[in-house]
Image (cartoon, rainbow, N blue to C red; front, top):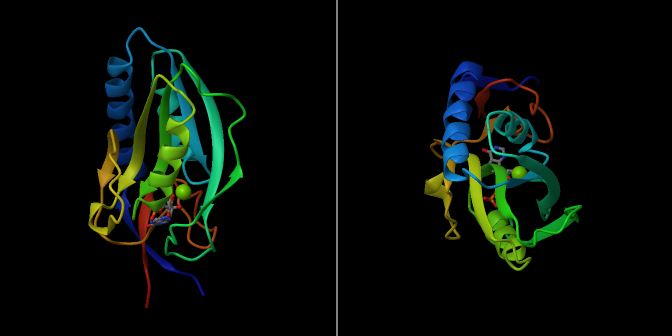
Length: 174
Ligand code: IMP
Ligand code: MG
């Protein structure tokens, strides 16, 4: 049976917000080079669009992590499925993630990345659900703050589906 999905942010709204984020990040990193670490798979669409809006030199790497299991709940037990290809030492690192929910994944990941002697590590998330936070995670750049609803599209999935929707929508569960 098809899930009912209602639009929360249209493709146009997302594009406009990514342009603003790109301009802000370009300004903040003026005169520097930026190393983007995208978190697979959810952040891929966002990371690529964001990178195109950044005017300082950019390099890209990707990492895959997962909470234990494949449910809609974060367990706090994080596994690295694919590590970065390159070291972070001496680099200005911007971690790009799709959504910060409980904060369990990012809390673990930022701790892990901070030990790799980068010059700086900041976080940019397309979406933030502050109501759900369990771990204190500071988001340096946020696309949109959203209420406690399960969303899909623009990289975000529900049981691996809907990542390719060009908008962000809420899954209406019965
Ligand atoms: P956290 O560890 O609870 O912050 O969860 C982070 C991960 O849970 C994200 O990277 C997503 O993969 C997933 N997630 C959390 N909320 C949603 C949602 O509303 N839609 C799709 N995935 C979500
Ligand atoms: Mg994710």
